[in-house]
Image (cartoon, rainbow, N blue to C red):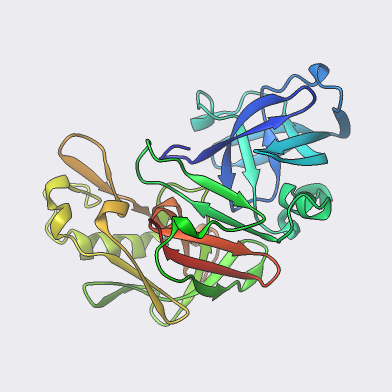
Length: 306
């Protein structure tokens, strides 16, 4: 797994073909490109081709049934989408091949059963939970745990937060504060826990407020750019959820763009998702907190990562 986009290896078909996929909490589907169906004895076409529209472009794909391996866990007769055209935008020359969705089944297209649900239904995993550990540094491996939790990857007890919508992994956030001042989400707002995004996201105007609190006297024209040397003096961004504070320090929310200049990893645009204030707690947040997703009790557990 990398730090700009966390990807994992899966294998598809018989004999297995290996693919690198983004672990995505904002979808429930599995789709990939570059597979050679005629080389697999377990491949079956299920559906005609159709189009999907993403921010980076249009994907034309067909639905098929295949055997999918994630580590030692195998899902038989799993519905997958196979891309029929080159994917435009940032995926065109990307090092990964597709997406593995881990949102709720209600988000799946064409009534397909998501991979996680198939693993549980077929008795491959015993518990309807999965967990995610995202490392900060490339030498240290990131981990997706299916059907159980390895508590060696977090410090302290898990703090549990109820899911407010069984579709995306959506929770209610009380506020976002910096230097003991409310910078966003006064009262409360909704937040989506999503490992498919590399930056924190909120409404555009609120994002500007975050920059002003962190970088009130910018040396660059772009207020999201700041000297990397100032990292030690910058405040954490504190996300308060279910009455509990989850601070995210500069070592997580700053990303280097050059030797001396860093980028505050926050941008706007969520007003296009909903008229109410919405935040996406992305990889930036998930690197700071080991996260357990409990489907049976519709809750999320959070604890500081090791």
